[in-house]
Image (cartoon, rainbow over all chains, first blue to last red; front, side, top):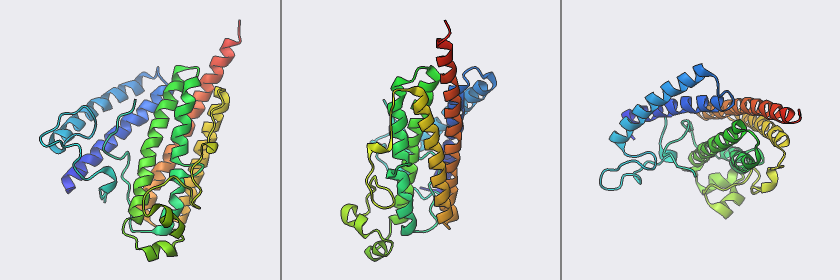
Length: 84
Length: 190
């Protein structure tokens, strides 16, 4: 994996983590409007970032379009990436 | 249902191959306070939860634990990846190697296989949520001891992330317990 892809992957991981953290918080604070606004704003950024990443590097989850040949099985898998 | 995402939740970094750490760390894969136990505990307890918040938090934290299981697997895999049989023997992993080579398996640091006896689902949401809070604290302590055992700053960075998650989960379970307590108290008023 080249530096640019790794950089974009890490960005995506960070965004998704932010969304998850707010998601868990909202589970026990469903009426916190500010947190909900933050969540919706992060999810919007995440959707764009995920789509941009997948257009360049192929699907990272199910239900996403693939170029030929089937890109899902492309290496590296998450445990094979050097994250340095 | 569940859907896989082809990425880790947090970068799993390892500064150098280290079999001794692999042996210690595998307890978070298949040990009593490890990520497999956490995931399976929460995901099986959620069915009897009385409030929507509790059903949500157990589903979501249980799912996050699966992501942590993958991080631990990646760390152990990387720590062992290039080891020779001699190095494996010297680290006290000869018995592990005989049974599993370098594959990942659900055991603790002493090779004891994972068992469902590590977890419980009591059907009583107050009892279950107390167990979950204790489980998070035990996992936090385990990560602390692992950080103490390790001198690899890259590995410790990932372990500190996981330690932090235990603290957040403990907090969310505490809030959930309060919501469930209030719900039960409220039902008793006629």
